[in-house]
Length: 318
Image (cartoon, rainbow, N blue to C red):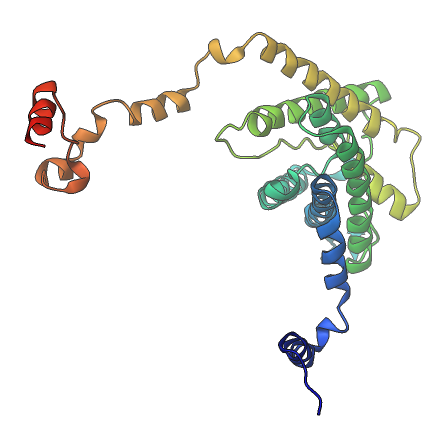
Protein backbone atom coordinates (compact mmCIF):
# COMPACT_ATOMS: atom_id res chain seq x y z
CA UNK A 1 0.00 0.00 0.00
CA UNK A 2 1.43 3.32 -1.08
CA UNK A 3 0.80 6.24 1.21
CA UNK A 4 1.69 9.72 0.02
CA UNK A 5 2.07 12.66 2.30
CA UNK A 6 -0.30 15.60 1.85
CA UNK A 7 2.50 17.81 0.63
CA UNK A 8 3.58 15.23 -1.93
CA UNK A 9 0.07 14.79 -3.29
CA UNK A 10 -0.39 18.52 -3.64
CA UNK A 11 2.92 18.76 -5.43
CA UNK A 12 1.92 16.01 -7.80
CA UNK A 13 -1.42 17.63 -8.52
CA UNK A 14 0.27 20.96 -9.05
CA UNK A 15 2.64 19.56 -11.67
CA UNK A 16 -0.18 17.62 -13.27
CA UNK A 17 -2.39 20.69 -13.50
CA UNK A 18 0.43 23.05 -14.51
CA UNK A 19 2.88 21.29 -16.82
CA UNK A 20 4.66 24.61 -17.42
CA UNK A 21 6.10 24.28 -13.89
CA UNK A 22 8.04 21.25 -15.08
CA UNK A 23 9.11 22.96 -18.31
CA UNK A 24 9.31 26.68 -17.50
CA UNK A 25 9.19 29.09 -20.41
CA UNK A 26 12.10 31.41 -21.27
CA UNK A 27 10.12 34.28 -19.78
CA UNK A 28 9.78 32.40 -16.51
CA UNK A 29 13.52 31.77 -16.45
CA UNK A 30 14.14 35.45 -17.15
CA UNK A 31 11.82 36.45 -14.32
CA UNK A 32 13.64 34.14 -11.91
CA UNK A 33 17.01 35.54 -12.92
CA UNK A 34 15.83 39.15 -12.62
CA UNK A 35 14.23 38.41 -9.26
CA UNK A 36 17.63 37.41 -7.92
CA UNK A 37 19.39 40.44 -9.42
CA UNK A 38 20.01 43.54 -7.31
CA UNK A 39 17.43 46.31 -7.52
CA UNK A 40 19.88 48.63 -9.28
CA UNK A 41 20.63 46.02 -11.94
CA UNK A 42 16.93 45.41 -12.58
CA UNK A 43 16.43 49.15 -12.90
CA UNK A 44 19.21 49.41 -15.48
CA UNK A 45 17.72 46.53 -17.48
CA UNK A 46 14.22 48.00 -17.46
CA UNK A 47 15.51 51.44 -18.43
CA UNK A 48 17.59 49.97 -21.26
CA UNK A 49 14.59 48.07 -22.62
CA UNK A 50 12.45 51.20 -22.43
CA UNK A 51 15.02 53.39 -24.19
CA UNK A 52 15.64 50.79 -26.89
CA UNK A 53 11.94 50.33 -27.66
CA UNK A 54 11.17 54.03 -27.28
CA UNK A 55 13.98 55.10 -29.60
CA UNK A 56 12.76 52.65 -32.24
CA UNK A 57 9.17 53.91 -32.01
CA UNK A 58 10.20 57.57 -31.94
CA UNK A 59 12.60 57.41 -34.88
CA UNK A 60 10.55 54.95 -36.94
CA UNK A 61 7.61 57.37 -37.01
CA UNK A 62 9.94 60.33 -37.59
CA UNK A 63 11.96 58.58 -40.30
CA UNK A 64 8.78 57.38 -41.99
CA UNK A 65 7.44 60.93 -42.13
CA UNK A 66 10.76 62.16 -43.49
CA UNK A 67 10.85 59.41 -46.09
CA UNK A 68 7.34 60.23 -47.29
CA UNK A 69 8.09 63.96 -47.40
CA UNK A 70 11.30 63.45 -49.38
CA UNK A 71 9.65 61.31 -52.04
CA UNK A 72 7.24 63.30 -54.19
CA UNK A 73 5.01 61.87 -56.90
CA UNK A 74 5.53 63.00 -60.48
CA UNK A 75 2.05 63.37 -61.98
CA UNK A 76 3.39 63.29 -65.54
CA UNK A 77 5.23 59.98 -65.42
CA UNK A 78 3.76 58.41 -62.31
CA UNK A 79 7.23 57.78 -60.94
CA UNK A 80 8.65 58.76 -57.59
CA UNK A 81 11.34 61.40 -57.44
CA UNK A 82 13.56 61.63 -54.39
CA UNK A 83 14.17 65.25 -53.52
CA UNK A 84 17.43 66.63 -52.19
CA UNK A 85 18.00 69.07 -49.35
CA UNK A 86 18.30 72.04 -51.68
CA UNK A 87 14.93 71.19 -53.32
CA UNK A 88 12.92 70.97 -50.11
CA UNK A 89 10.01 73.38 -49.90
CA UNK A 90 8.46 74.82 -46.72
CA UNK A 91 5.63 72.27 -46.77
CA UNK A 92 8.14 69.40 -46.74
CA UNK A 93 10.11 70.99 -43.92
CA UNK A 94 6.95 71.52 -41.86
CA UNK A 95 5.86 67.92 -42.45
CA UNK A 96 9.26 66.60 -41.33
CA UNK A 97 9.33 68.87 -38.29
CA UNK A 98 5.86 67.80 -37.19
CA UNK A 99 6.76 64.14 -37.71
CA UNK A 100 9.71 64.46 -35.34
CA UNK A 101 7.93 66.74 -32.88
CA UNK A 102 4.74 64.72 -32.47
CA UNK A 103 6.61 61.42 -32.41
CA UNK A 104 8.92 62.72 -29.69
CA UNK A 105 6.05 64.15 -27.64
CA UNK A 106 3.99 60.95 -27.72
CA UNK A 107 6.81 58.52 -27.06
CA UNK A 108 8.37 60.70 -24.38
CA UNK A 109 5.09 60.66 -22.49
CA UNK A 110 4.71 56.90 -22.95
CA UNK A 111 8.21 55.96 -21.82
CA UNK A 112 8.81 58.73 -19.29
CA UNK A 113 7.93 56.54 -16.30
CA UNK A 114 10.06 53.66 -17.62
CA UNK A 115 13.35 55.22 -18.64
CA UNK A 116 12.83 58.98 -18.71
CA UNK A 117 12.02 59.11 -22.43
CA UNK A 118 15.42 60.49 -23.46
CA UNK A 119 16.03 58.79 -26.86
CA UNK A 120 19.10 60.95 -27.38
CA UNK A 121 22.73 60.35 -26.31
CA UNK A 122 23.30 64.10 -26.01
CA UNK A 123 20.32 64.48 -23.67
CA UNK A 124 21.51 61.45 -21.69
CA UNK A 125 24.95 63.04 -21.42
CA UNK A 126 23.38 66.23 -20.13
CA UNK A 127 21.28 64.38 -17.57
CA UNK A 128 24.45 62.71 -16.30
CA UNK A 129 26.21 66.07 -16.03
CA UNK A 130 23.51 67.40 -13.69
CA UNK A 131 23.36 64.16 -11.71
CA UNK A 132 19.94 62.93 -12.83
CA UNK A 133 21.35 59.59 -14.05
CA UNK A 134 24.40 57.62 -12.99
CA UNK A 135 27.42 57.15 -15.21
CA UNK A 136 26.70 53.44 -15.70
CA UNK A 137 23.12 54.09 -16.77
CA UNK A 138 24.16 56.94 -19.05
CA UNK A 139 26.58 54.66 -20.91
CA UNK A 140 24.00 51.87 -21.13
CA UNK A 141 21.24 54.17 -22.39
CA UNK A 142 23.54 55.79 -24.94
CA UNK A 143 24.40 52.40 -26.42
CA UNK A 144 20.80 51.18 -26.69
CA UNK A 145 19.71 54.54 -28.13
CA UNK A 146 22.21 54.16 -30.96
CA UNK A 147 21.12 50.56 -31.54
CA UNK A 148 17.47 51.62 -31.58
CA UNK A 149 18.21 54.32 -34.15
CA UNK A 150 19.93 51.77 -36.40
CA UNK A 151 16.95 49.40 -36.12
CA UNK A 152 14.48 52.19 -36.90
CA UNK A 153 16.45 53.27 -39.97
CA UNK A 154 16.68 49.67 -41.16
CA UNK A 155 12.93 49.16 -40.79
CA UNK A 156 12.14 52.29 -42.80
CA UNK A 157 14.64 51.23 -45.46
CA UNK A 158 12.93 47.85 -45.82
CA UNK A 159 9.30 48.95 -45.55
CA UNK A 160 9.36 52.08 -47.74
CA UNK A 161 10.27 52.29 -51.40
CA UNK A 162 12.60 54.75 -53.05
CA UNK A 163 15.69 54.03 -50.99
CA UNK A 164 16.38 55.39 -47.53
CA UNK A 165 16.39 59.19 -47.71
CA UNK A 166 16.42 60.39 -44.12
CA UNK A 167 20.09 61.21 -43.59
CA UNK A 168 21.16 64.50 -42.04
CA UNK A 169 23.13 66.56 -44.55
CA UNK A 170 24.46 70.09 -44.67
CA UNK A 171 22.76 72.41 -47.11
CA UNK A 172 24.85 73.75 -49.95
CA UNK A 173 24.95 77.20 -48.35
CA UNK A 174 26.06 76.06 -44.87
CA UNK A 175 29.71 75.75 -43.90
CA UNK A 176 31.13 73.28 -41.40
CA UNK A 177 31.57 75.97 -38.77
CA UNK A 178 28.01 77.19 -39.25
CA UNK A 179 26.65 73.66 -39.04
CA UNK A 180 28.61 72.96 -35.88
CA UNK A 181 27.40 76.04 -34.03
CA UNK A 182 23.82 75.58 -35.21
CA UNK A 183 23.86 72.05 -33.80
CA UNK A 184 25.48 73.29 -30.60
CA UNK A 185 23.03 76.14 -29.97
CA UNK A 186 19.87 74.23 -30.92
CA UNK A 187 20.88 71.22 -28.82
CA UNK A 188 21.72 73.48 -25.88
CA UNK A 189 18.24 74.98 -26.09
CA UNK A 190 16.67 71.51 -26.39
CA UNK A 191 18.60 70.06 -23.44
CA UNK A 192 18.04 73.11 -21.24
CA UNK A 193 14.30 72.90 -21.95
CA UNK A 194 14.36 69.26 -20.86
CA UNK A 195 16.23 70.19 -17.69
CA UNK A 196 13.65 72.79 -16.74
CA UNK A 197 10.59 70.73 -17.73
CA UNK A 198 11.68 67.25 -16.64
CA UNK A 199 14.53 67.51 -14.16
CA UNK A 200 12.79 70.35 -12.30
CA UNK A 201 9.47 68.46 -12.17
CA UNK A 202 7.44 71.34 -13.57
CA UNK A 203 3.83 70.71 -14.51
CA UNK A 204 4.67 71.33 -18.15
CA UNK A 205 4.42 69.19 -21.20
CA UNK A 206 7.47 67.38 -22.51
CA UNK A 207 7.77 68.89 -25.99
CA UNK A 208 11.22 69.57 -27.35
CA UNK A 209 11.91 71.92 -30.27
CA UNK A 210 13.01 70.43 -33.54
CA UNK A 211 15.27 72.38 -35.89
CA UNK A 212 15.32 71.49 -39.56
CA UNK A 213 16.85 72.79 -42.80
CA UNK A 214 20.25 74.37 -42.15
CA UNK A 215 21.99 71.27 -40.75
CA UNK A 216 19.31 68.68 -41.34
CA UNK A 217 18.13 69.25 -37.78
CA UNK A 218 19.86 66.39 -36.01
CA UNK A 219 20.28 67.56 -32.40
CA UNK A 220 20.62 63.83 -31.74
CA UNK A 221 23.76 61.79 -32.54
CA UNK A 222 21.76 58.55 -32.67
CA UNK A 223 19.35 60.07 -35.22
CA UNK A 224 22.29 60.77 -37.56
CA UNK A 225 24.08 57.49 -36.83
CA UNK A 226 21.17 55.19 -37.71
CA UNK A 227 20.75 56.16 -41.39
CA UNK A 228 24.53 56.44 -41.84
CA UNK A 229 25.04 52.86 -40.67
CA UNK A 230 22.18 51.46 -42.76
CA UNK A 231 23.37 53.29 -45.89
CA UNK A 232 27.04 52.63 -45.07
CA UNK A 233 27.69 56.28 -45.82
CA UNK A 234 29.48 58.62 -43.43
CA UNK A 235 30.10 62.11 -44.87
CA UNK A 236 33.31 63.83 -43.83
CA UNK A 237 31.27 66.29 -41.74
CA UNK A 238 29.42 63.56 -39.81
CA UNK A 239 31.38 64.57 -36.71
CA UNK A 240 29.40 67.79 -36.30
CA UNK A 241 26.31 65.71 -35.44
CA UNK A 242 28.22 64.29 -32.48
CA UNK A 243 30.52 67.05 -31.26
CA UNK A 244 27.92 69.79 -31.72
CA UNK A 245 25.13 68.15 -29.67
CA UNK A 246 27.49 67.02 -26.90
CA UNK A 247 28.97 70.51 -26.62
CA UNK A 248 25.43 71.89 -26.58
CA UNK A 249 24.52 69.54 -23.73
CA UNK A 250 27.63 70.70 -21.86
CA UNK A 251 26.62 74.34 -22.35
CA UNK A 252 23.07 73.63 -21.19
CA UNK A 253 24.33 71.83 -18.08
CA UNK A 254 26.60 74.76 -17.23
CA UNK A 255 23.72 77.23 -17.58
CA UNK A 256 21.43 75.00 -15.54
CA UNK A 257 23.94 74.69 -12.70
CA UNK A 258 24.51 78.44 -12.77
CA UNK A 259 20.85 79.35 -12.34
CA UNK A 260 20.45 76.63 -9.72
CA UNK A 261 23.40 77.96 -7.71
CA UNK A 262 21.86 81.44 -7.85
CA UNK A 263 18.53 80.03 -6.55
CA UNK A 264 16.45 81.07 -9.53
CA UNK A 265 13.29 80.02 -7.67
CA UNK A 266 13.52 83.17 -5.56
CA UNK A 267 13.91 85.49 -8.55
CA UNK A 268 10.49 84.69 -10.00
CA UNK A 269 8.23 82.67 -7.68
CA UNK A 270 6.41 79.83 -9.37
CA UNK A 271 2.86 81.00 -10.26
CA UNK A 272 1.69 77.39 -10.13
CA UNK A 273 2.89 77.16 -6.54
CA UNK A 274 0.96 80.34 -5.74
CA UNK A 275 -2.18 78.86 -7.26
CA UNK A 276 -1.81 75.71 -5.20
CA UNK A 277 -1.18 77.72 -2.04
CA UNK A 278 -4.30 79.80 -2.66
CA UNK A 279 -6.32 76.63 -2.91
CA UNK A 280 -5.40 75.59 0.61
CA UNK A 281 -5.53 78.94 2.42
CA UNK A 282 -7.18 78.77 5.87
CA UNK A 283 -10.91 79.29 5.58
CA UNK A 284 -11.02 78.48 1.88
CA UNK A 285 -12.91 75.28 2.59
CA UNK A 286 -15.64 77.32 4.31
CA UNK A 287 -16.49 78.92 0.97
CA UNK A 288 -17.99 75.63 -0.18
CA UNK A 289 -21.79 76.14 -0.11
CA UNK A 290 -22.35 72.48 0.77
CA UNK A 291 -20.60 73.01 4.07
CA UNK A 292 -23.06 75.78 5.01
CA UNK A 293 -26.14 73.92 3.82
CA UNK A 294 -25.26 70.76 5.74
CA UNK A 295 -23.86 71.86 9.11
CA UNK A 296 -24.83 68.48 10.62
CA UNK A 297 -22.56 66.61 8.25
CA UNK A 298 -20.09 64.74 10.49
CA UNK A 299 -17.30 65.59 8.09
CA UNK A 300 -17.96 69.30 8.60
CA UNK A 301 -18.16 69.31 12.39
CA UNK A 302 -15.34 70.70 14.46
CA UNK A 303 -14.01 68.46 17.23
CA UNK A 304 -15.25 69.45 20.70
CA UNK A 305 -12.99 71.90 22.43
CA UNK A 306 -12.03 71.02 25.98
CA UNK A 307 -11.54 73.50 28.81
CA UNK A 308 -10.04 73.07 32.25
CA UNK A 309 -13.47 73.53 33.83
CA UNK A 310 -15.12 70.86 31.70
CA UNK A 311 -12.28 68.48 32.24
CA UNK A 312 -12.41 69.10 35.96
CA UNK A 313 -16.15 68.43 36.17
CA UNK A 314 -15.72 65.20 34.26
CA UNK A 315 -13.04 64.04 36.66
CA UNK A 316 -15.22 64.94 39.68
CA UNK A 317 -18.10 62.86 38.28
CA UNK A 318 -15.79 59.91 38.08
